[in-house]
Image 1 (tube, rainbow, N blue to C red):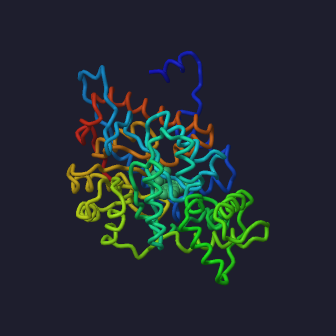
Image 2: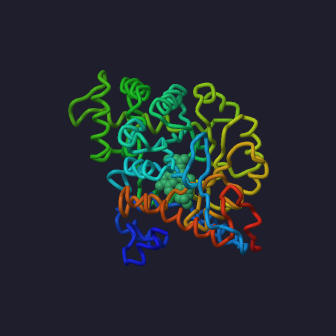
Image 3: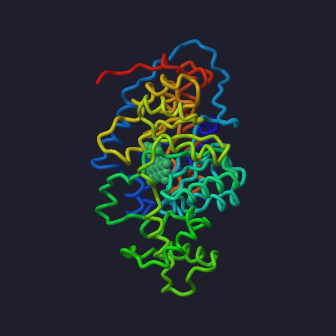
Length: 415
Ligand code: FNR
């Protein structure tokens, strides 16, 4: 209602309410390279389209004359009460989106009470984010490194810096085929961007030092000036490395080491126990699309799953993520929270995902658009808009409590 009132008095919101105008505002605020990285999806980008098409296919069927005068949008998740059932999905390399990147997003998380999942590919380390926004509900998203010690170190750092859950992303053990970035010859990590979680890590520093003792197989591309500065301060903080002038081989060795340890595509279900034994935090698996994988997740004893296709950035020609939700919800049968992301753009979309059984719903690009357009304030606005539209949609659909939303509120069109 506050947003409406401001509209009545002619005040415009900090960022556009309309998703398409929001997208365009972000685009005009960003470099072309940054935009392609943010917007790009896998292959012909058909999965990203399928994500939207899936939301179009489900339609809301309202009930009349229900008392919806007071409505509850909050949910409880891993012991924390969330004011709205939203999550800020992990997005790497936010320095390409806004100079304050992860820090601005964390400020918005603190203000709104919406948890932010800090990416392994973040532009600011989890410790730095914790320092800047200690009240922000934070989860740590883990890309499982090929190096065991690095996995352990990151999980422990997440615990120590106040993260409340570990989200293991399963769908990106290999980076997707992304023509926009490929055609631009652009892999941010190769230039030292989005590697702040690594450059703050003592285990990573020792891997780089080890690497410096061996001749390099193929030289990494030259880091960008900003990345060079970050890599420098890393090498200063870890004495014993070679340093001190611009010809230092340290930055390149760090980039090479990153490219080498980024992921482990040999990972299997049996190895999940490795993380379980190293933390008491809730463990959430992100990137599930099949009921049989949900069953394996239950067998592995994890605390939650995120149904997601990474916003269509990994496999071209995949299912719209929302289509995968009902099967997984049925398999999980209320035993652990089922979270959802990929393609959510409006409060009505959030309503649909909740009605299909999601406990809470993640957004990716939309908050990055808000960040690009207006920094922390933009992220906050995007969350407010989604929350307000969800609230209105619930009222109009005859639902007073998100916990009571169910498939009866929807119908599915054929085709
Ligand atoms: C992502 N996503 C992602 N996921 C993850 O687990 N770790 C990561 O580092 C990233 N990085 C990332 C960068 C960019 C630019 C985008 C757009 C996405 C995926 C993200 O968490 C989420 O699954 C999708 O963004 C959800 O889809 P929508 O909301 O963007 O359609």
